[in-house]
Length: 187
Ligand code: GDP
Image 1 (cartoon, rainbow, N blue to C red):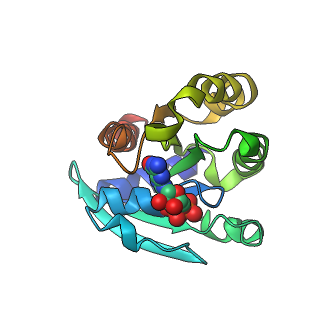
Image 2 (cartoon, rainbow, N blue to C red; image 1 turned 45 degrees about the vertical axis):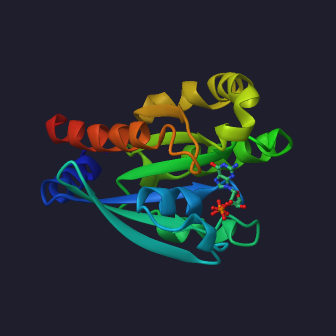
C-alpha cells in the first residue's frame, strides 16, 4: 500500500495521471469524453476495446482510458488496472433495471482488485437531463451497498451529471484533480 502510494506520488509529481473510465455499456462514457474534449457528441460510436485521450487540467495531464463496457469485454478490464491513479465509474441514470448489474460490477472491480487500492474514485451518475428522478434511488443504493466499503480504501465522490448538457462535468473533473493533488501530501 505504501509503495503504491510512493509510485503514484512520483508519477503525479511529473503531472501525469492515468484515469480509467469504466461502467456498463451505454452508460455514456464516450459521450462524456466528447463533452470533456469539446468534440461533436453525434460522432460518438460504441467503444470496442479502448480509447485514450489526454486532457490538461489544473496543471495535470489526465490520460483518460475509455474502456468498452460490453459484457464480452468486462473479463478483460483487469488488463487496464496497472498503474491507474484514478477510477471514474459511470452509472446510467436512465437504466434503473441495470442498477443491480452496475453495482455488482463496481463491487467486483473495486473490492477484488488490489492494483486499484488507494486510487481516487468518482461515480458519475450520468444522463440526469432525462433521468433526474432516479438520482436519489441510485445514491441511496450506492450508499447502502458500496460506499461504506469503498471509503475504507478510496476517496470517493458521487456526482450527478449529463454528458449532453455538461451539468456536473466540471464539478467531477475538479474532484478528480483535487483528489489526485491531495495525494501529493499523503507521505
Ligand atoms: P458508452 O457505451 O458508455 O461509451 O456510452 P455512449 O457514450 O456510447 O452513450 C450511449 C448512449 O447514451 C448514446 O446514445 C448517447 O447519445 C447517450 N447519452 C450519453 N450521455 C448522455 C446524456 O448525458 N444524456 C442523454 N440524454 N443521453 C446520453
